[in-house]
Length: 149
Image (cartoon, rainbow, N blue to C red; front, side):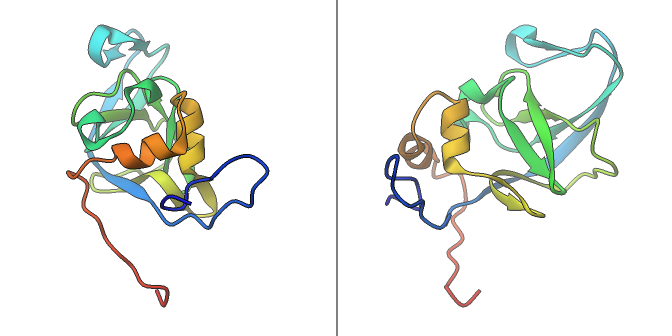
């Protein structure tokens, strides 16, 4: 097992020991036709609310998650929209009430009973969990917790 990643099919899954979180740093009201991301790969079809998260491919988040991955905010899934940039990931928060600046988004881990595993992220990025884990950059702070927490 590498940092709690799945070692292969047919084997017992290890207990998840890694989580990745980012803060909401900007909230924007978008209108039909508005676009986001490099190359404007996502276009709003109606009025939407978008949140920018302070995390991107410079932190090890795979660019392939753009327009296909999701995050958890307040236990609800928010789809990643547009391409992931070096320092920012944008998500659609239209279906989540009362999001505020500073709220925490979970890219890997659990939030109020919902979970996104390393293997979920790897599948969405067409890779393996080990690549996701070893790709997490030194820019991400590491917080070590003991078994008693």
